[in-house]
Image (cartoon, rainbow, N blue to C red):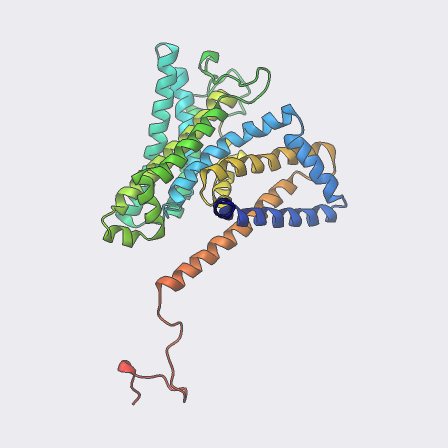
Length: 376
């Protein structure tokens, strides 16, 4: 009985072994960078930990920052686990946040109607924006990575145009490109009065549970995972890989749109140009998905850890001579070590699927045989 439980526990913890190793190695590299700056790594990491989790205020601040990272990480896990490696989460989050802010402020009618319209239209808009990249891949075989990356810039500058020329709030500093503040009755309530953490974190946790159920307990999730292993095998077995592509990319965009909605309703209370870009929510969320191996529960834990690195880095910049960029160094090396794992797995998969020898066979005398295996 004990053996079966130990095996079960080992199978559960096995996927987290490599991510923990990557984090440990990244912290070692960070320690070297800290020593180069003339500080004690143990002291600095203690300050970072206290600045991220050392009090109720810092913990709730870290959870607030982790909220959009969790949601965008789930979105990345949905498409990447299906072998559709889109990197357009930032643009989809921008579209969702922009639509939610504009509709929630300008739509007529009662509060509940404005809120519901803002949420529904924002989710639909971000989903359709992601669906466009799926259409480009399907019809023109355009690289998904390139198209989604370019659509990030399109979303940022198109929304900037509309905010600056149509929906700009002129009652505040003209240097800020932002929409009007939404009504207080529309905003997400705080979990603890007087603190920053809002109900968006609860929404993120619910999305973690729903994503896990979708990926592990539904037919669509099973088919998408099979598609991630081998799309040609799926087509041969009767699974429509094109349906998986459109469905997962649209769903991923809708989830990213929810991240934008949460930031508008829970933090900024308006759409502010470049906020999502400078905060790198979608990119850190992608890191969280890669680190956790697309496991939704792992994304929840990893996102909080990565958010803690950022908030702890801010505490360092306030109280020591170590620059804020140390947190970026640690995050960058975590990504590097995880990427090394992905590359190694990809090369192994190539070797397994391509049985052809790397070099033409030769006879013992060094001559290359002609077609049919015979030499002239």
